[in-house]
Length: 96
Image 1 (cartoon, rainbow, N blue to C red):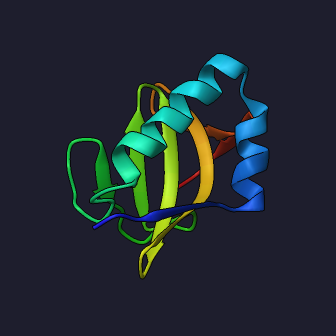
Image 2 (cartoon, helix red, strand yellow):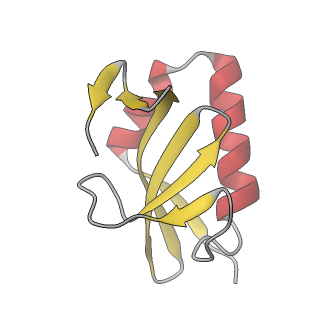
Image 3 (cartoon, rainbow, N blue to C red):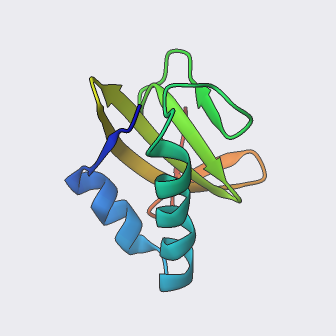
């Protein structure tokens, strides 16, 4: 099943935080791993338990893409990065 990708305004601002190189990595991961089978758990995609950010997470290198699936649309809700075991969104530490 093919999914449509919707980048929310907040996620677009998160993406703008990164330099062009990181943006290419993130957008490439979204196209490769979320356009098809976004609802199937893999080593890169996992369903999160109770989480205030989003019900799904995609890992690509140190970057984390948080998303939700509604019908045939993947809504990208937030984009951040991990340093060690800490998550940062727009440079601010976030607890999940």
